[in-house]
Image (cartoon, rainbow, N blue to C red; front, side, top):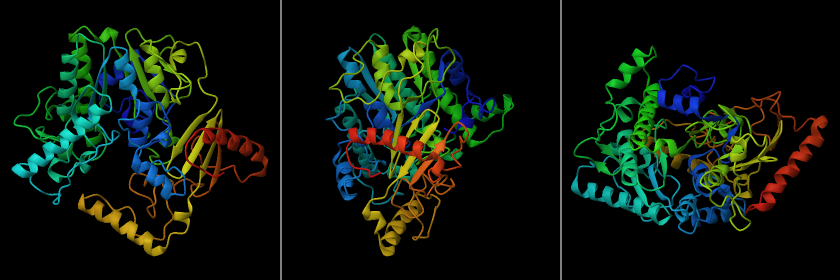
Amino acid sequence: MYPDMLNFLPEGHGRNLTPNLDRLAREGTVMTNQYVSSPLCTPSRYSVLTGRYASRARNQGFLRFTQKNDGQTVVQWNTFVTPEDRILPHYLKELGYVTGMVGKNHVIEVKGLEHFADYYADPTDPEVAAKVARNYQRVVQAIRRCGFDYADGIYHNNPDYIGLWKLAVHNMDWITACGLRFIEQNKDRPFFLYFATTVPHAPTEAERSWKADRRITAKGILPEPPRVLPDSESIPERLRKAGLPVDDDRANVLWLDDSLGALLRKLEELDLLDNTVVFFFNDHGQRAKGTLYQGGIHDPSVVWRKGGFAVGGSCAVPVSNVDFLPTILHLVDGPVRDASSGIDGSSFVPALQRRVTRIHDALYFELGYSRAVIKGRWKYLAVRYPARLKNMSLEERRRILERYNRQRILKRMPIVNQDPSKPFSHLSAIPGGGHAESESTGKKPGYYDPDQLYDLQSDPDELHNLAKDPAYEPVLREMQEVLRGFLKRLPGKFEL
């Protein structure tokens, strides 16, 4: 979600119709200095569920990729949770909670999915439908093997990557219906629901999002649409009534808010809301997705409970998404952290209780070929490419780019670059960068500098790299030592 999609942020104030999210922000606490350690779908979700930095992932694909890159961990869409990982549902189940996942997965590793030879095959064809159903069950079973008791309404990835064009649409009604079912089934037990929406991620055009056929799901085509949210025709009507323009972004955000409202109403109907804590957060910032610039890593969140928290409507203490797991455990009186847990995060409950003004001495970030730390007003960002990339031939670069672009064309997605000689982005080994990071690749003046130092107090947009200025050499060295401190505790190598 972009900042202008959130009414509780200055960029979005009054621009959206989101009464339910507005309620959470009004009655709860906005974490104004919320950060994400790896601003990309998969590694961000890995950190939320494990409380660990994504470079600690142990799935075989990630380990092999590390070897391929001379032992340097390269965090991309490759850091998956496996049954060997201890994640939030495991801790909560030990405390008597039933756990559920609904919505977008993109973090639990799923093996054995069947591929579709024809991306444009008919999902109503019996053979195709059977394959869709088998794949769906494999995803559900993988999620359960990793610790969740319940999994339904699941998109294994974003809709465009389900495998079939005619199923590549969003369906918040279906996701919401599955979330409501979980709450109803477990109304007499303590529960934890991980509810991951697919909107407002692409595809955002009306016919594939808020205005799509609500019978179409990642599970196949339903006989009847779920009827748990206002119908699609009401969305533009309500936007106009609120005096807002009708566009796909606002429509999808309203659709998301309708879903949130349905969940809150169900909790109220069952007399459960007063004993529920709600966390609302993004998996990354959108203004610089795929980079460790502020627009990618800084992304305010909301924590809500009946009566609020002592800190009040906002909390400026810097926190990370690795902190969600220990914070949740703290709130339910569970084991927050011990020496053997391997948890990197810390509970920010003391900040919510207004007992502390600092949780971390410094914050750490990792993504692709970059690493960063923030301490006080200073931020240091380093970019290092392994020999494989530095020595790659033009012919190999061309093959990589052409293969990437063929997949984009197949899925009717825009082409970002066709020049194989362009430099790599911070995130991926695609000449010129991939689509995910395209809005930020090369946009900062210091983007291609291997060492970058920014004074976030005077330069929040990171336009002036101070690393080359001799006057700031002591600060640069100090921040490099801060980064080394994190790197020593983490797998893989990263040369400074």
